Image (tube, rainbow, N blue to C red; front, side):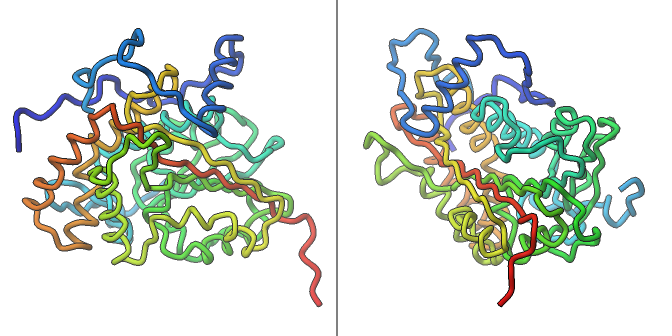
Length: 362
C-alpha cells in the first residue's frame, strides 16, 4: 500500500432525502437539465471551470427474536444472521452510511422523484430490500395516507419512523405470507446483487398485488461505460465490477440481471411496462453542479465501500486472500480518483402494472 489512506467523504449523506415539493424556478430548471443529461450525454467540465474542485477534497417486526438480532462477523465486518450467507455484503454502520449515500445519489439524479410509476394515492406499499429504510420513510412522508412496509434480511432500520411506516425481517425470495391483492405498489431497488430467482420473486409480487397496482424495479447496471473514449482498456474499476460479477455468480446471483427486467415483468404478466435508463457519472468530471454531486456520491460509495464490496464475492466466491484483494485495490483507488476518465454506470428504472382483469385463457 502507498502512503496514508485518503480522507473519507467530505459530506455525510443525509438521513432524509432532500425533498422540496415547492421547487423554485431555478431548481426546476436544474432538475430538467440533470434529467436530460442523465438520459443523453453528460457534459464534462474543464479543469478551469469555477468550482470544479480537486480530487484531494474527497476520497472518497415489532418483536424480533434474538436469533435474528444476532449478527455474524467476518474479517472485521458485520453480516446478517437471518438466512445467513444469502446476502454477500455487510450490514454494519459503515455499510448503512454507504447505502444512505446511494439513496441521496439516486434522488438527486432523478430530480427528487422516489418513483416513476404513475401512482394515484397508493394505500398499501411494499419496499423489498429496504436496507436502512430511508426510501420507505420518504415514501411514507410523501403519501401519509398509505401504509408502507419495508422488508429486509437485516433489522437495521430506525425505531422512530412515520406512523404509517413499518419494517419486518423477511426474505423476499421465500413464499410471501401476505393475502392476495394486498399491495398497490411494490418497489425494489439495488437488489441485483442479492436476488437469485427473479421470476419467482416477481411471480409472488404479481399474486400479492391488487389489480391495477404498479411494480417498479430500480437497478444500477454494474458495467462502466464511456461516451468520449477517455476510458482505457486497463481501467481498474471495470475490472473490479467484472470480478464482483464473477464472485456473485458462484452463489447464483446475476449482477447484470437488470438488463432483463422489462422482459421479466412481461413474463410475470405485467402490462404497460416502461423503461428509463439514466447515466450516473463516476467522479466529479461533469460540468453540471448536480451531476457533479451525483458523481461524487457514486465515487464515494464505491471508494468508501471497497472492502464491503469485495470481501464476500472475492474471498467466499473467488477464494482470493485478503492480501491479494488489497494489492488489486491499489489500482482501483487510483483510477477512481482520475477525473480525466469520463466513465459512468447506467441506472435502469423499469415499471409495470398488474392488469385490472386477469388475462383471457384459451
